[in-house]
Length: 203
Image (cartoon, rainbow, N blue to C red; front, side, top):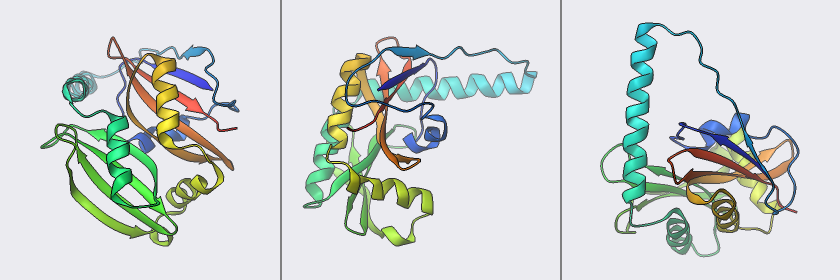
């Protein structure tokens, strides 16, 4: 497992950040050391600085909403998993930016993909709740979801390990197909509101 601490960064959806997630081969479900990535301060214009401040404010608000949520990401996985018998949860992310805070969860069974919203305050399933055909998804999305067939571990297993390793609460996560290797990527919010990426390669 490889952990990468990225202070001050927030995922709006887990898969947005996964293109840079797998930097080296990962090991089995065994916690390893953390790698802190230094963040350089580039030269920016006044307008860019103002935009960065706004983005930080939005991130801080969303983290505040996440910390106040009564339903955890693990509970959201369990709730969404019960909606579709036999399906497996592929990815989940917290969205506190608009309206009621929700966890957006995708579950997969055969060639069907369900997208459900789980209310982060009540645990009620609401919102989209619709089903898609796996064949109609983009190739990268389809590959990530099909990678579930090659692992016996569940997303909740990876979340439990990541939360323990990073000493925090998961805000998003999912399975990706990293050059043919199924890899769980979990983002965990630590006690001081820093975001840590935990990468887990199933045995």
